[in-house]
Length: 197
Image (cartoon, rainbow, N blue to C red; front, side, top):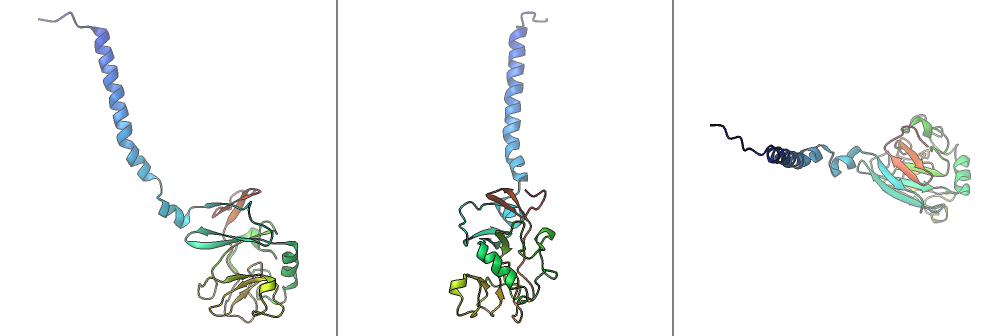
């Protein structure tokens, strides 16, 4: 015998409530799987672009960032530093950076998108040591005419303030310039060179 006293409104409410609760449960269960698809912090550190705030770098100062496990030096050069770079073209091995690793936009005398900022990987091209940043006034022990730059104490390689290697040192090439772009006047994105600002 068929029961005709079934409350259709109650049945619809219970069906809708069960569907909503089930949907929420499925969504909650899916969250760990979806979040697992995102790259881990370690993976991001290996190759993902790194955003760096350069607003606090004073002229003549340097900031060290990390990209792909390597130190990236960001040097804000003064007018005097830029003039010193030009005066060293005959002293460096690869003044036009023809044999060195850098993006095409950094294949110029200053090896930079903007003359004021040098962005360079801080690893010597000889044996992978990390050179020291030595200002002009601190470099008497390096050379009597030192104009500032990078000095690798391990084997004596020297680089100017554009990361260009001096003649007669063990390092074979200029310091490497990573891909980068300005995403605002005070922010860099290292590891990405698409549509630079």
